Length: 310
Image (cartoon, rainbow, N blue to C red; front, top):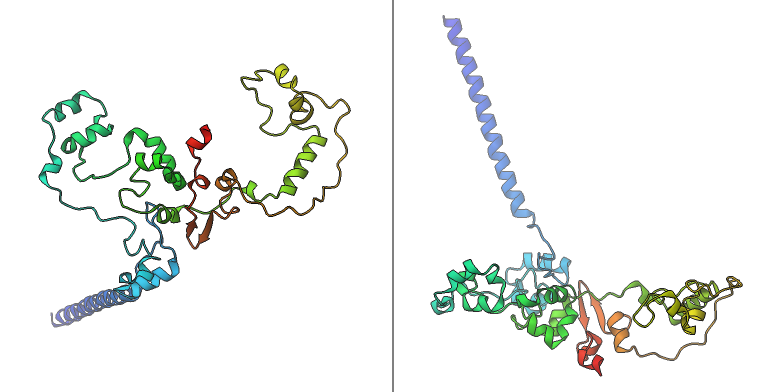
């Protein structure tokens, strides 16, 4: 009996020791994790889901995290708009009760009209029913496709018509100037902008001597609805559409050395060239993850419909 009691006591002591060791390890693990959380910086993302970005991510990650009042300085807030919460204006949490006042017919109209709350006039008249009590300014639903295009190319906001139709996208609601808005528009040219005038001339000569069509020139139109009408025009038959019109009886000419043209005088981009190649034409300049745009002439940003009609 005494021997059994000794074994039992020894076993109990071992179990207590193991329990104490496990508890000690768990506390030590919690202590280490707490210290790591205090040392490691929080996760950082340069942009949010709406496309609002910090201009200098490496600077903003350190400046905003290390200095609690860093965003109070314009030099920091201007470059770290995402981290400092400067991209989106604050929305008031409470509106007067009169903001949700609406005619008593709104609830019945919603049942009768499919998609009523996607119609601009009803969104203003039936704020409570459509859930727009807190909406003071937004893009017009009637012009959704136009506003979607403006979100992809903010240069469209240089048009007064676009700003009227899409005040939310174009910064009218948040009182953001066009110049500040366009800092979010990438300053990039399509590949064809890198080609020089010499390259264009030599490519045209090569296509002509090879009896190839000039791309995009040989489609049928109202004036030339078929191949016969197209090829009856000497410009298309003898130059632009030699393959389509089979106007190379002797076949392609042998290749020749590229022309060496004299230096071209300084060239000022036309409005069309400036819209198609803004970086090459000096309309924009990259600045970190942002861009600086020249907004002094809207015709170099977006076509002016009134000018096109004249």
